[in-house]
Length: 156
Image (cartoon, rainbow, N blue to C red; front, side, top):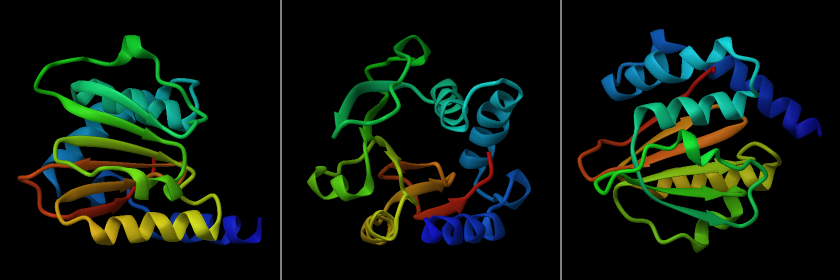
């Protein structure tokens, strides 16, 4: 429990809002989708996910583990040229994932404990072409061929 508090304080200190983001893709994602959801009474995770679903299209959906949060499939925009959505219960299960391009990976519990946080960091270091978004309660990874590696710690 003490580690989670330390991790949260570190997150608050390092996190930025849209003014600290210099990636056009991430800026559009958070300002036009995620931050517009913040006026609702939904949980932070739900606002983030529904905001992302407004911004991207999904080709397929796969669960790894037993994720706590379930997605409302009516909010997902499906398309044959969309991203493969992979929903992972915790960062320990990332090792079993076959990493490909054009994936949207949603990882729960990235700061739940020291072990999960270390797995999250190792995963991020091992991926060359990703955009990773750390919202403390959830981690979002966009894997794309055309993308330079970027990591953002964001408030939502």
